[in-house]
Image (tube, rainbow, N blue to C red):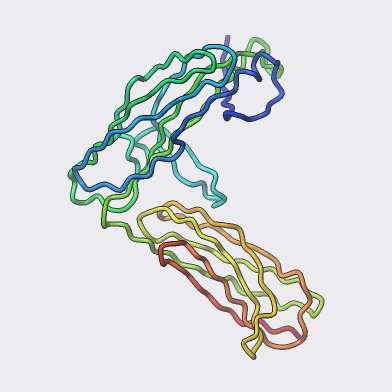
Length: 270
């Protein structure tokens, strides 16, 4: 018999039998653990894992690496521990590795983070501590003899920054604007790059300005989430008509902590 595991996020509504659907109810009190540590420093902490379901469950804890996906929309990619260049999974130890949690109960996992004394460590490092429970099995209707095993999985993300070494740097590049007619709209495309050594979360906007310096319109671009070294596309539309004339389109990426990227491009409406 072949097994295929499918993960379900806690609280997600899925089309399962009532018994399985009711079991998808894991939570924790520390979904994000942000630490600023010196090289060679160690800290300890704890995470509460909560079973909000009607039945007792067995939960397995394990580490993985994470980074933002190339889509730049905040979704994350998870890979085995110590795989990514900015992994801190090997710095983290925890106990216990298996939890037995009663219905409507909770359990505590204690963790220790030990940063190596390596002088070359700079910027941000990342890992996730997953908590996973097998909640049931169903026949795979697409393959005879196969069974799909469903698991509820939640995680605590670790975001560890080496003190006084973070470089928040980026680059914003605008692609050439196609001249619209007076009816509009025009498409706006840009590329946002993370050239530093820590993650960036950027609020992106644009405004259209006439030659007299008066802003005639404003718009939003998607928010960008970038791990170090990543590049993500940004796109948006100006929907309103523009009178014939010359304009400037200014795009701003506000990435927080004084990092603001601004690029400007001329636009002529015939």
